[in-house]
Image (cartoon, rainbow, N blue to C red; front, side):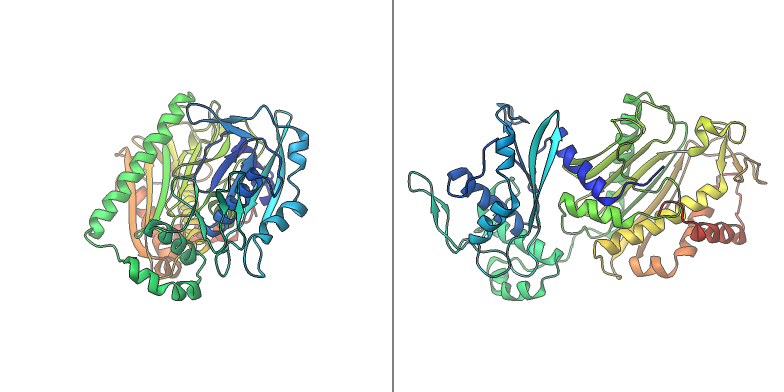
Length: 459
């Protein structure tokens, strides 16, 4: 399978915003109206763009209207002329005329087609050094202010663009500053932080054991959702593996475009079906990346045989992957019998890939090396299976005596990097111990790890 490039994935993401409209703090839908910078709609659009830039970035889709039930539907008034009015050579200068300073707001305009209708999609980037203050006054036809000189606009948690005023608004701006590592901005706002009592607080009141239990509860919830979707799609899951990881202390929330970027950067090249695969134009239309309230979610393999993947990356940095066991797929012929075997080499490779993916993901998210991370592996549906090599030949171990086995480790990111092979060995030993106390030789795991490290099939 040819791997999609990032431009294709970004285009697929934009198309999904049209297919599955869902307004959030970082995604806004607007009616089919032409852009004119002096008209009320155009002035309000400029305000929204400034607010998005101050709120960490986001996306505005032109050509949808809200029905009486709060759903966003394609606007029948959308025309090619309206779409054509969204020209970056017109919109970008209009926005930058409305902000102070020499550094303008960075934005892109894409024209995407769905059902023969062209929709402008405006992608706004976050501020990099300082937020954007409004530089002009603009009123509507009744003299009511639409833009106020000196105002600092930001996106609220209620998915609206507001003038920054409340403690929650300041927290939102500070969260973006922390994410972008704008230490200078934090220093400048230090007095205001103290005034509002917003100084960062360390989590307290919850023990590590309680946080671990909360993480495991979340993992179980995601597993239940993955199984529910499989049942709805008439997929029979004989056996499964899951990999989940998350910072002990949740990260600042991220917008969809940031999540997509880190998933692209974290993908490992060692296997033909990598963890966190983003489908693009293959298999069937139900295989898709979907923005949801919790973050980005992908489901692959509904209503057909073969791989079944369900993964989720939350806005606060937790990742979950559920996958059916490859040994249960029918294309193997006589090598593996569905429901009867578990491939030892595949266990090593998948755990190694999961740990590599975990490290790459949190490096991309800017997690400090000393930050503590949960790392969980679970295999399910094992009772009675035989442990085999990659040719389907039985390894000297009895059949599995338990249905489920799991491994959970809490370690700093630096520890994961320094002891990656040791963690993989520990996890593999735990997983295969259900085969009547089988103790896998370290040399066997080391050999498979070396083959995994030398592999590059999906880079």
